[in-house]
Each structure stands twice: as structure tokens, then as C-alpha cells.
Image (cartoon, rainbow, N blue to C red; front, side):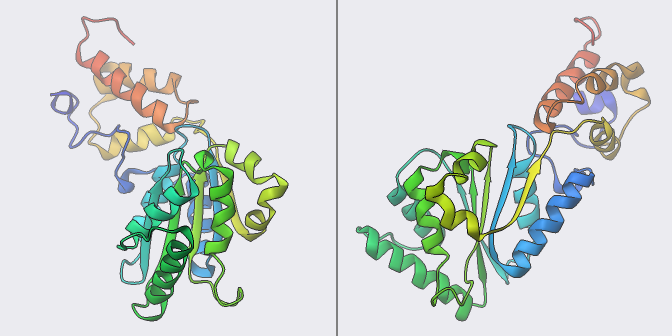
Length: 249
């Protein structure tokens, strides 16, 4: 109903936007360049940002554009748990039946990663989302997963995605081995102008001034919020404009 009222071809504001709708801001261009470098040279990368700044969207959009015949995406959306939980989730992503003991599980995962590279010619990319929730012992395990053939081969690429707390955690001395392996890092800031909102409205099939500009004005007032909050406030503004008898924007 809302789409018909505004003349949209599709809903321009959602928490899971179409990658084609993403505004090519300077920040997004920088993220893509760094992630492309990481994929081409392998190793470890770090992507941080405040809640709703677009970290997960950036990681998902970039990985979705990779050739699935050349890369295997191992995506872990993390919740607090043990190192063993991390290894079991990774084993399941590799289509393995997790071994019972930790040592066997690590060996099982390492062998599967080597097989992907050597037999299937697929390079695995491990994306740990919400990585600020990883416990210290789980973070200490990650450098060990990156070690193959006395560090001479890079069979696994790691991307840590999380809130600024993750940077502070990695600055601890105990995580020096992991921090030294991070070759690419970027911090996403929230959008300041309203350009992304306007771009996505136009891509959704914009009608003249969106009901006398009420929705657009409300969105511009919220434009200094991170993208997710801007999306939510924009959707609410659409509803306000769709029902002019209610409290206006």
C-alpha cells in the first residue's frame, strides 16, 4: 500500500538493502578497495563501525559479488561462546561433521581448508561478524587457523567485523599475534549527508516531492544517524506521509 501511494517500484528503505541500491559514497569505495586488496593478497582484515553503520551490509554485499567457483564464503555471525563453539561452527560451514576433541577438530578444519585450495581451487574466506563478542581464547585461536606450512602459504583469508570495542580488544598484548597479521583495516563512520537516502528513493521510483516533501524533510533531519537508523526513520516517515491525518513529520 505504501509503495503504491508513493509510486515506488519497490521499498527503498529496509534493514537489508539490495546491493544495487547502495550509494557509492567515499566510505563504501574505500571499503571495497580494501576488501578487494584483502581477497587478492589473502591474510587478515578488520572492519569496524558503530551499531548500524553498515559493516555487515558492506561485508555481505562484497562477498556476494565474488566468484563462487573461486571463493568459498564461511560466514559466522557470532554470539558469546567458547573456542570449541567457534571451531564447531566453522566445521559446519565447511560441511564437516565436527570432531569431538579440540585437537582433532583443528586438524579436521585445517585439512579441509587445504583441500579446498589444492583440490577444488577454491579459496575460503572466513567472515566473523559481531567479532567483538568473541572471547579472548577464541581470538587467540584465529592466528593458529591462519598458519599453514610454516607460514609459507595463505590458504585462508580472515575478515573480522565488529564494533569499536573489537579494536580495543585487539590492542591487548595477548592478541599481538593476531594484530600483526591484520594487513587491511577500515572504520566505517555513519553517513552525514542525505545523499544515500535520496539515491535510494530515486532508485525505488520517486514521485514528485514525496507527498509535498514531508517524508524527505523528515529523512534529512535524521541524516546524521547511521544508515540503519536512517532507514528505520525513513520508513516511519513514509508511513506518516501516507496517513496525513496522523501526527505529521
